[in-house]
Length: 480
Image (cartoon, rainbow, N blue to C red):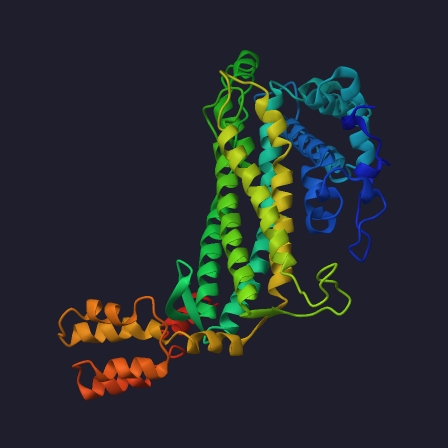
């Protein structure tokens, strides 16, 4: 039996998680970890991007188009629907289930066309309703399959963004915001090029990630998806021959906008997917920000700046019992990289099509949910790891106390202010490539021709207090 026609009871289709989040027996046979090991993290996407979800969205568009046509006075051959008929039509979508989807797949197996199978299914339902049976041929009227598909995918992406992606990224951002606020004043040795640099605070560095996530999340939320509904090659050919007196561009614009989507007025057979490409690009950028975050936290854990809250039942290493590995951040990074590879590929490839249409985009669009699923899995991993973090202020202080040479910036800056000759070069010759302790720094100050009050001010500074406006920035960037 072809893969597309697997029975509903197939383990690959029926893979779910039990109440404890453990995969069911069926999930152990899933080909993809999305429907196996990681099913709980991305299960919310299954009703949207599965074959069942795509069929249901296609039916939603077909039903809506039939109702829309019935509302146009010019189309006298299809009279207005009464409230009972509209409610019945809506119930075909709201009550759509796996049995209905299987029926449509059986039709597809016979005729070898997925969208036409939905049309035939809907006509079959209308045939059972005496008042609507005479009007079956207004199902899929003047439509090409891509009219149905492009609207379906736009709705799928829109729903996934609202129901799954935005709530998940906001939950993660909130956890990072809270951690940034909690560590806003925790002085930390900065590292530029991997070398000791002017001190900062842990909270301020986390606030950078929060700010970046907030900006990309706003871009993602604001993006308006487009759809078209203009027939076989975008010219309303069939529409115009049937009802030449009707303003079809206006009618179809109203139909698309009824789904809270933007109307694309000029296309080939396909909507060119530029907005889907942008959707993927923004999501990839958001994921790249989190790759950066995961790597930084991984490094801070390695330095001992963060410890991870222990779970007595967990095993860190199969042979080294002392270890608590940063597996949540590593797992997240791997899923982010996979998601980014797919999203970047989609953004590049979906924006191209041979002449008025080729079918390359069809199989790519079917995999959009895969990229979104790996994003969700990654975000859950980052969130899980972030919630385990505990700051080690002693370790932060230890590193600061071992690197007094980072105060060289403060010294040469005040030398510039007070007009000393070649201040940068003087301090460079005394400090470059060297490690200073407090006594060494104070001996250096004794040798400089600075006013006493300036030297006293510099002697009062420590690496832990030389953090500039870091705490202020951290708190302002993460304020509600």
